[in-house]
Length: 580
Image (cartoon, rainbow, N blue to C red; front, side):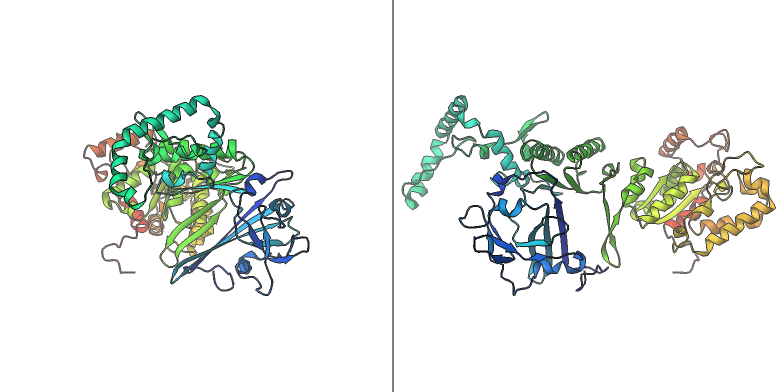
């Protein structure tokens, strides 16, 4: 952001995050837990009765005024203190119970000395009131319990046991009545006695050689986990038996992730039921096979608990982009050669209904997308592997089968909305036909090249003028050869040299309209041929098998039309072609 708070497309040395929570009507807060929090001060004035009257902050234009939160008017005195543990002070319940809106404002600033961070806690009764600005944020987990699973899984950190962490609170909840169990007390005492016996040699030696000399009277004890005091919950260890029982910290990241997610879900559902929960997971797909990824994706959906909780994930896994709910938000983050990192907010509900499988979801991670009418995706991919090995993946190109000409147009809109370069591979009749059925021919209507959105033609590799050129060319074909316009399957039926040249120009602009159907490119008409011997799914398997056994795509298909499209997609400079 610039000095006025406006978003710019340059690398910003400052990050601002605003998190706002709304309390439901009749929803109570866990005052026992809140009263354990450290106190905080707010901007205002102290009243004679020891309470305080807050000075309100108006933040209608938050984007431009957020710095006001961190640098308020210093002429004001903000010595009013809130702390339930002190006498003659504002109690947490007195201050917070009337409030229905809570917010946290966080900013991080990159300076020469490092990263400087600040966080503020704000609250108000309703949208009609200004915000009470506090100088601290001690009341956090009691309003929004959160857990973070970074890409590097470390259960020792995520499952740290203390009275402040969610896992510590969970273990304390589960063991709170155990100390009154006589059988457990006897077992714990026996464990302690056995530990003293086993470790007596080393403890005596250390005491005599070093400890007692430096610290007279000090005693060393090495014990097994388990004790008889009130800290029993801190001595609980996590083990997983997946064929071999061992501590969770020794298991793979996949098991660790699933376990931590399950424990946090149990905690929010059974223990901390008064507050909403936020689960942040970085790359949940790590170390998981595809089936396990889908299971974890389902568990994250379950964790939402009817939108009571929230989940934020960063992912490269298509399995986590399978569905869209009313509260599903998508932020597409990409590296950009000019501006560094670009984040694009999307309303995923507008297009996720068009994405029916993981292969199509791949477009979120692409830089370029070639939309194929059907199974010709497999032929185009195999052709690229032979002519330009590895280039599709090196350039982040996705080949997507959309199953139908109408879906070519719909999916092109999705790709363009996502900000990716879009290309088309389709049969010859995608240049022909109309969206409505003609009165004089019994043919199936469909969308055509002309119906592609204007944004498609505004791409650098296409050109705006081509939309009008295509419309004019289609009109000429319709007027001069009406019957063929609605029935032809191959360009040769028109016997028009200009049409052949026109198709070549289309391919040179990333519009890969073939001379006929994909089957017309087959050199083995006994295997694949137009009409009766279609390139279906069984032929896809057979093609892969033949290529694995050593045959080449150039032996099986005429590749020139596909090559003409690929050189545009991959920006391959042709021999003799002038440099850009």
